[in-house]
Length: 286
Ligand code: ACO
Image (cartoon, rainbow, N blue to C red; front, side, top):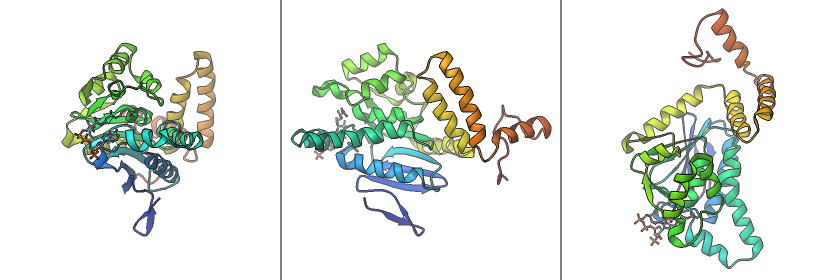
């Protein structure tokens, strides 16, 4: 992995992934614009290193995953991932698949910092996995999405079929799985694949707005809230109630900022804010 230097500190990145820091946001750009950011074996390795590094980098409060140039990502690289692993040993193939699975869903689902996918253009096939595994997603209205696997004779594999089933309803998911039909950002919003679609010239601005809201929150509670939601979703009601009660207690225990106590005091005693309108005053807030 090559590393750039900004203000005397190394910036994680590599040939295929570029990182920029800006006011608490780490912009992580898939960086193979000539190949429409198709995801190669090298990109999987770079993304694993980048996400590992950002998790412990205090310049990063929120990760925004996006693509350089006109694509978010044209999916798996048919040449530099699939064909490249067709004729290697089983062990090498499994290593490539494992590297890809690691960043695209295992790491992203359980990432300790909030993540936003900013879909700036083409988004095909395998690109649906990291898109869905980011916490939030904002798309350009004219971004183009497609489960194009059927068009070149494969199924939405990796873990794409599972990933889409967590956000899309069965009729719609199967329609796109079976037809390979493209759809735009507006439709992606209606399908629940992205939170919102905005005009292309508002995409970055809107993403920054959302990231700033997240950066204002107590980061410990934000992490616990994201994890609690993701795990509870998989549980039965009785289990979820027990787990969430325990998780809430644990959150209070691990929260060095003592958010719950401050939130209650500022609302009930000091009457300086209303939780319905925004976040309590954190240390260092002006
Ligand atoms: N894998 C490998 N190379 C790719 C991929 C890909 N997924 N997508 C684009 N490229 C390459 C092209 O081969 C081309 O390379 P070249 O310049 O060496 O010829 C270059 O990127 C530019 O691509 P174009 O097709 O010329 O770009 P265009 O803007 O006309 O079209 C589009 C973009 C629609 C994204 C088109 O490239 C495409 O259909 N790509 C494949 C999309 C796809 O089906 N992805 C796989 C999904 S399935 C899965 O991920 C498991």
